[in-house]
Structures are given as C-alpha cells and as structure tokens.
Length: 94
Image 1 (cartoon, helix red, strand yellow):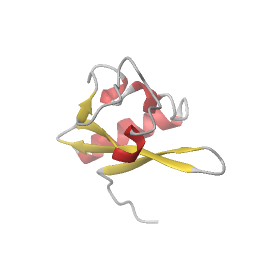
Image 2: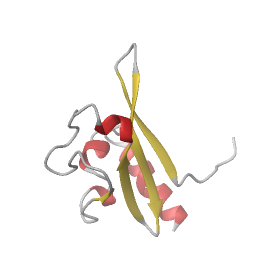
Image 3: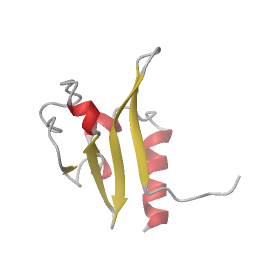
C-alpha cells in the first residue's frame, strides 16, 4: 500500500443506524482547521461547547495542546498509536 498524504479529513458521528457528518478537518502550513458541516449546525448538538462553539466559520485550536488538534478529536484517537501517528504524519508533511 502506497502512502498518500491527506490534507482533508471528513468527521462523522456514527450512531449505528445513522452516520451524521459533523464537519471537516484541514491541515495547511502545519495548522489544523475545523469547520462544521452546515447540516450538523442545525442539529444543535454540542461536541465541545467550551472550545469548539457550534457556529459557522473556521476554528483553530491552541497549537501547544494536542499538537494543534482540537481536544474532542484528539480524544477519539487511540491512546498510544494514534497520537504518535498524527505527530509522524504532520512531521512528514512539513
């Protein structure tokens, strides 16, 4: 399997019977950006009310925490491998 860099990741919540698109993460110039999907905004579901307000626009996180990834998404990574994998991918991508 050949490695292909990814600069955009679509985020979904999986409720078993339904997959709800939450938004997308994008990486540019070593900064991770998040934007909610317009349909998800209409649900009123808060995934991180203090640090990722449910509003339109592009959001960034504190780069000194979780390598710049919003905490709600960092929490969904596997404990050891996922975080390390993210660091390696970001380093390789420059």
